[in-house]
Length: 95
Image 1 (tube, rainbow, N blue to C red):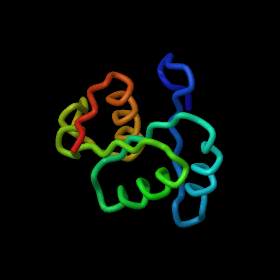
Image 2: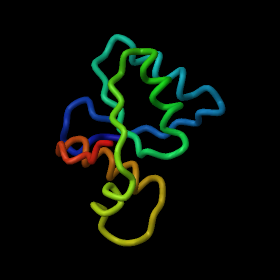
Image 3: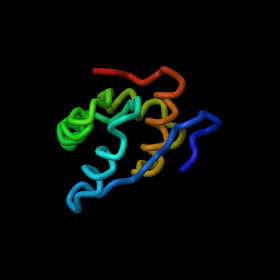
Image 4: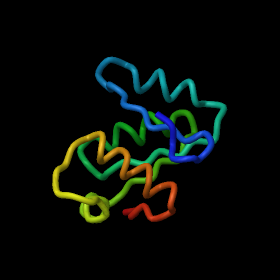
């Protein structure tokens, strides 16, 4: 998915259990990559996979990310878009 006018910015859903994430991160090895992730149970896995290829992982505070959202309903695609937006705008609430 394109990234709001920012060159090279992508939002991608990956299935970790099927090996998609590891394959995708390996494909980025020669690029400068920043990965944003909420501090949930899966963030350690994402950090490990991204770290293997030299990607910089930014872990964010869930409550502050959620507070930046418009509306109350929570779902993965909206949350992912919000994480992307906060990273682009340098407003990502880091741990």
